[in-house]
Image (tube, rainbow over all chains, first blue to last red; front, side):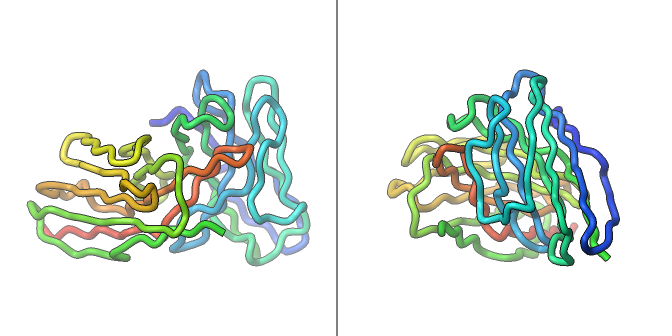
Length: 114
Length: 112
């Protein structure tokens, strides 16, 4: 148990729709990172939020966006869903933004696009 | 971009055997982390390595941070059935954010 919780656990959407995924960080952690994990692959970094601001982003288009709230929880929003967006979306929390403190993962949201 | 090459992709061993897997890269990483992922769950941190040359143990697990900062290995001694799962190495890059770059994973299967 890492204390990182994600909701929902599963979601089915169709192409062109929009989706919002949610993450509650581990107690005391002020940084949230989001990753996309395609089937059979390692997770890919989407972006990181620290003190309610995006402080780093991977190679994902602008239709992937996020928010972090004052209680450090976070949302991942994806607009104009495409079939290739089908994946497990993982949230990880850590302490200290760009510090070397390790990231701890939730169990993810499985997103299926029809 | 940064990439990690993790090997082997899969391993089939007998219970009680020792296991070794490794990751290499052409890039330098600040830290190396090893995670285990079970079906339907997120990755769970096993070992974190912070200094080049560092050797760290966690029970039956031992991992080392390569001296060049471009590689790491994980050893599991005397494997047991609950060791089954997918093991990922991850290197940390600090570019504004702390970004984890993951290997492709090693799937471990144990025959009782």
